[in-house]
Image (cartoon, rainbow, N blue to C red; front, side):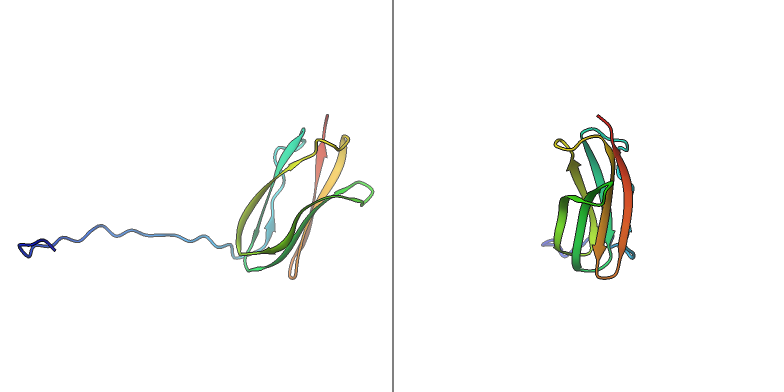
Length: 107
């Protein structure tokens, strides 16, 4: 409202909040990779999340996430500088969801 009593409405602004409605673990990219790759996942509710990397023998080689997280989409870069070439698995676990995918490290 101006001093003379005139007024004007602003344009409507819409805000979209993208909270995922389901758990998911995406395929890493690039795959095969050298020496780093990106892992993406989404969680629909707050809770404890564990994201770990395993070698082909099932031995844990890295724990990327091991904490309580808020609902949302996440992206993590995994660097395999110290690991030999080969097949690796990454696994996400929460109270309600578990998924495992494979990735290949080529030197």
